Amino acid sequence: MIGSCDTWSSADAVGTGAEWSLRYTHDDDFLSISVFIPPSGRCAEAVRDVYAEIFALTGWSGYPDICRLWHYIGDINGANADGLETYRDFCVGRARAFEELRPPFGMPAATGVGSSGEGITVCVLATRAGRLTAIENPDQVPAYHYPTRYGPRPPSFARAGYLERAEGDVLFLSGTASIVGHETVHVGDLHGQLDRTLTNIRTVVGGPNLARHGVDGHFGLADFDRVKVYVRHAEHLPAVEAVCRAVFTGDPAVELVRADLCRSDLLVEVEGVIAVRGALPRVLRRADQPDRAGAPTLAQAPVVSAP
Ligand code: 3EB
Image (cartoon, rainbow, N blue to C red):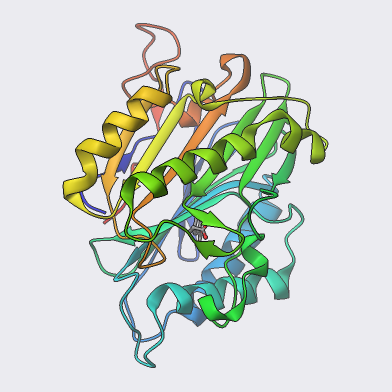
């Protein structure tokens, strides 16, 4: 990934700080954390340690539920010093952290994509604002049960997270790709992958699936307020943009990013946010989308950017 940066702003008073290797900022309801893991021949242990710090900070600072994680991984499909793919090495460390430390919120919604820089940047959004439910997709094996042919330890994430809160619920959709069961489908076929990705998204956010998870709600592609699309090959960007702008009709900010993806056969991955009753948390509004026209932003969180 290159040239992309999420700026999270808040109209509330924010606090900022640093603890161990973490930098963080928070308002009343949300805590955002970013951390950079420098490049090395093997990353699993450093990833495990950073996750231990993240779980410790979210726990004792009183924002216990991690509603969203983003991982920007340099040389994601390259090999580490042992010949293991960087993404698989990363998954080993992350799985160890979840096993050893057993966080209270279950699996979080996440994205894991390549970065054009070196090392790994992890961005976290945690909350104390409501009740968080992990959502799976019945057409996909839960990522944490993927078989070992995709790596020694499986990825640790849920397909979505549903946050019920007084101001309005928020659905955080994880990075979603053309995977059925645990297998990549439509290998080498951009439009096939995009169609399957959109089908997976409809299934995850649809009423029957949410009801299965005890969540009252039913959504479609038109309900998304934020959409980000990661595209492996730059020449695919125009076609992917045309399809996405046609189906995400809720006038969200559809952002497209060129990025490598965690399986070398994946061509496209889509993530997003649905804010029920328009209640997008302030930390998820873009700097150019203030919640009241003309209202100044009192304080701005540190920019979280992928290298
Ligand atoms: C997949 O479904 C596609 O490792 O955190 C999507 C979202 C993917 C998050 C992660 C990976 C991750 O397996 C890849």
